[in-house]
Image 1 (tube, rainbow, N blue to C red):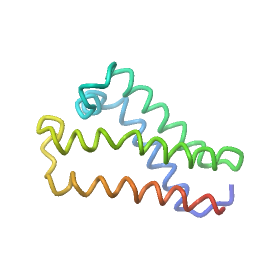
Image 2: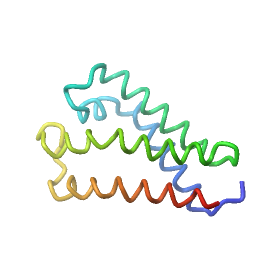
Image 3: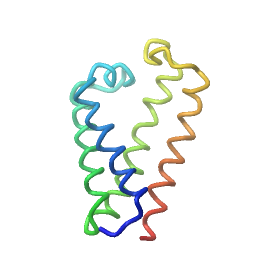
Image 4: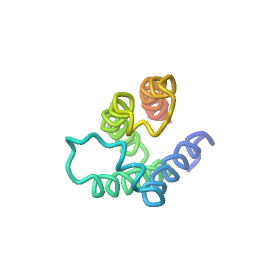
Length: 119
């Protein structure tokens, strides 16, 4: 577990984000596109996934698998970001500029995770 501090920061961010799925589930259900079934179940599953991935990033035996899981998870989250951009109710009052900025941020987060494969 001798990784740079910022890998642990990433892990903490995912654990915190996953925990929020259980603290504010309605917020997450609102941002899911209507064509996806079972919003509540998807919020629970994604929350568990984020928490699990966050912890898995901290251990040598699971770190690389967790990195690929982060990239896959963020890819699956992209439709929610586009839905928020295109649907006023789903946008939760967040400015359009910020919603647009979140899309390339997803790719930056993917690159950030990918970068840790070298450790």
